[in-house]
Structures are given as C-alpha cells and as structure tokens.
Image (tube, rainbow, N blue to C red; front, side, top):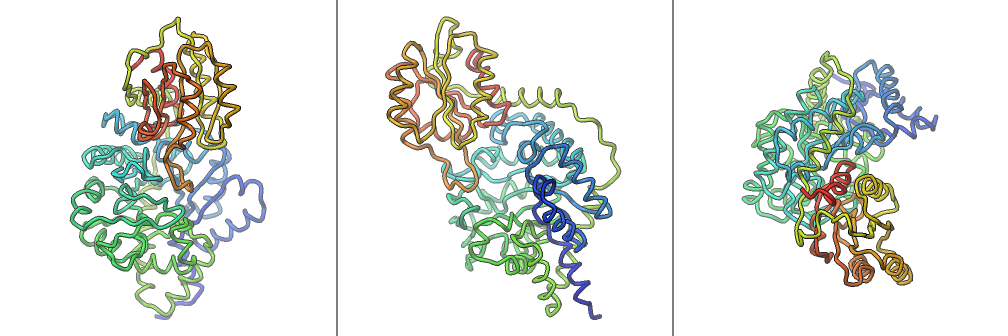
Length: 503
C-alpha cells in the first residue's frame, strides 16, 4: 500500500522529541508558533529546559490541550526538577547518594523526584546515570555517577528505577554502553571508549544489564565511539552494532531506546539534523532526541522512508513502542500535593550522610573561640552557591569570620589584599565549587587557585570543602578536607553543619 508523503511526515514526526525552552515560549510569539507547528506536525513530545516552575506547569497544560493530551514531556532531573527548572526540591547528586550508600534512601529520593516530576506534567526523567566513574578526569560524568565500582552503581541504579517507575514516570538508564571511562565532553566532541569488548561486558555494561533486569522502561545511548564493538567509529547513539545487535538483541531490551541530545557537538560537528535522524532510526533508535533542526529531521526522515521500506517499518515499530509507553505513564493516578518541607528534610538527611572528613580531624568541629576567614572558590560567574554557603555558615557558626569570593582570575593585588584583610583569622576555609560541567571540557582546578590559597593562608591552618568533584583534592593543599560529593543546596548546608558538628 502506498503511503502519502503527508502521512509519512506524521509518522516521522512521531519519533521526534524537540527541545522546549519555557522562558522563550512565554516571551517570544514566533517561538510559540514554532512549537505549536511541531505539535500539529505530530511530534511525540518535548524535552523541557529552564523556566519557573509555575510557568512551566501552565505551559505544559496548555500544550497538552493543544496536543490532545498525548504529548510526552521529558526532562533531565538527575537530582530533582531543580536541575532544569527554578523551583522544587534540590536533592544531592548521585555520587553523594552512593557515598551515603543507603538503598532505601536512594529509592525514596527517586520517588520524591518522580512525584515532583509528575506534578509538573513531565512523565519521563532521563535518570539514573548508569555510568561507572572509572576515570577521575572525566569532564562530564563525575558526581553524576553513583560511584567508581559496578557494585555501587548497580545497587543504586536499581533502587532509583524502582522509586521512579512506582509513580508511572519512565526511568532512563544512561549513557549506554557506559560513559564513565572517557576523557572528552560529548557536548564538545566525540569521546572514544578505548577498552576491549571483554572489559566492556565485565565492567561498563553491568549496571545497564542490572537496570534491564530491574524493568527500566528506557535506555539512552551515549555519544561515544566504541571501536571494539563498532570499527566504523560511529557514535553509539547512531550505531547498529551497539543499538540493535548489543542492546536490543544480546541484552534483550524491549523498551524504548533514545539518543542522547542530537544538538551536542559530538553530533553536530559531523552530521546534519537530517543525517543524524536517519542514522538513528537505521541504528534501531526509537526516540530522536533534540535534533538541532526538528523540521529538517522530520522532512528528511519522511522523504527517506518514502523510498526505503525498511525505514518505514522501523518508524512504525518505534511509534508503536512510544505509544505503549504513553499509555503506561498516562495511566490514571491521583497526584498528591508535593510536601516541600518533607522532601527538603529528606534531601538534607541524605546530604549529611554523604559527608566525609579527612586529614587533620583536630580542626573539626571549629572551636567556638576560633576566628576564621572563608572564601568561596567559584568555577563560573554564578555567585549564588557561594552566597548560599556563607548564609548557612552565618546561621550555624557563632565565631568571628570574614567572607570573600575568588576564582582562577584572581590577581596578585587581590591575593595580597585578602591576606592583609584576614590577618587576624586563626583558620582559613576554602569552599571549592568545582565539578564537571557541560561545555567546559575539564573538571580540574587551575593551579592559580592553589597558589592563591596558600598565599592567602600564609602558613595558617587550612580547611578545604570540596563541594563537587572529590578528585580535586590532589590539586589543592589543605590540612583538613570536608567532601560533600554534591554542590546542591542540601550538600552546601551539610558542609556548613560539618564545620561545627563534624559527621
């Protein structure tokens, strides 16, 4: 039976999930019209980024009405909706949960995140991260992973999946076949996983196998080349040997397979939106996530499928899988009111359980008679995490103290001024807000930071609070280290409490 190009476009659109920027939608009429046109074209849903909670909830309700109540909304809410949306509860990062190592707690937090996710109108959370953080220099995984060993990652991934899907929110095991042992940020380029097929089977793949056994309903393919399994050098997200031969056939995964974002540099530096979408469907992908140009991806897929019966059939199969997931997650379920106080307390309890103190334990807790100076060492131009830290310290600590900010751009004049201004302090504290962030390409600490800290302290005892990557300890000299494994709000609060109460 011949299918018209109009019907083929609708079928092609049904596997496309574009980006949705709520603030842009609220303020820009042309952008709203573009989103409405994509809904009329038949896209399966949208991935939500940035915006105020109430605005996002209202927008989703409006778009669901326009789409007949069949749009699937997704989000990257690895440590809560606050990862992308202003509002909701900030929970500790995965590595903090792994350090706390309380499976019940991890499952409760996953359920709380799912509750807030569903109350927002989103039914698909791109979590948990099943990558094992095998490489401390990994510039993109880091504290997003539950840990450095397969056993730690497996146990917490399973509990996260159970907590999430108990609320009819689709969990997503990512980034298959494992992004932890790489050293390139896939937002900037294509990482290469240079390990043997045997090591991949016995290490990186273990959390994904366990996630599949636990009933995870979706798996996200990573943008990384795996030469031992696909000599072509294609990203796993566009690789038939990895998507179909390995994940679908050998591991027997029956749920929906989604690409990582196709607007990332690992893809856009090599493929057009049309090429990436076609390669994804040919590889066995079900959901084509965030193509840089959704309209181009839809048209390219439709035209290609008109002359390729195999691709036409693949589109049908993927569309049916997506519809099945929609039926599952749209199941009638009463949504209880979100208790922010209860969830905030849960988040802080988990953050406290993750804190570790090492080095000279005699400096912690701070004696009441001790004066100190505290500096927030910032990684970017956003001072708010440092402000939050100083606020908590002021609320908890009664000691005399001075506060300041610094980053890698600190000048010699500023260093000398800080040393003079804090000359009467007995102890100098440096709260380092440094972790893996997309588009930076590194998770290291600039040597200038350590040099500046030593000059400011000028021989006085130093406490370093690692609010983010635990691995920067080797590049920063201090007497005592407080490690939180998360720079989320509860992690910052837990660090402040640790100064006076220890762990």
